[in-house]
Image: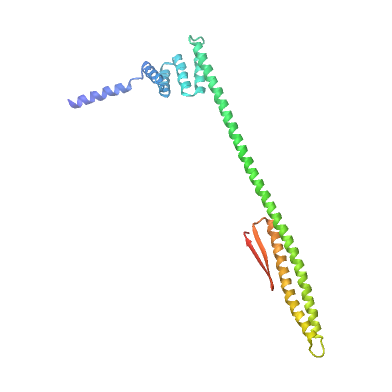
Length: 252
């Protein structure tokens, strides 16, 4: 007996599930959602009702729901479909008003999108111009920096050449004094000693100046090359009484 009751209950439930949708019920439920502002649910129910009945007025209702949902493009399609089916609808004024509202909303949407697009393009243009100015400033700074290094290189090399030439003159003078001492005959006297002292002094001075000048020339050449390559380099020449020293620091 219990098994028979269960079977009958299952049969009744199956028949209930197999019953088709009631268009009137779907319409009424959609209207309830529409009045609550739940336009998405209203669209779903009214669309199911329209699929069953093909009632033209439901197209207008669907258009209203889509318009209030914010989809005026779809709403205009439904309004147009309704007017194609109902050539002389009683509610034409209401439909035309709804179409006018939707078209105005679409115009405003297009204008808003155009403004936003123009603003994005303007912002992009400003960004590109800012980046271009920054790049130009970096290039200008690099060129100016390279020019300063090359100028410093020329001055340093020129000064080094002058120092080296002066050192060469002192070295030559030292050799002349050495030759005088070598050619001295007779007793060693004060003049011979003086010539030897001068030769030794000139040799020390000349050698120091010669090496210092060469160091300055090398440093000047280094500054010129690095300035041409636009690398940040610091270079200096330290002169000592017995020669020159080169200090070059930076990044290559």
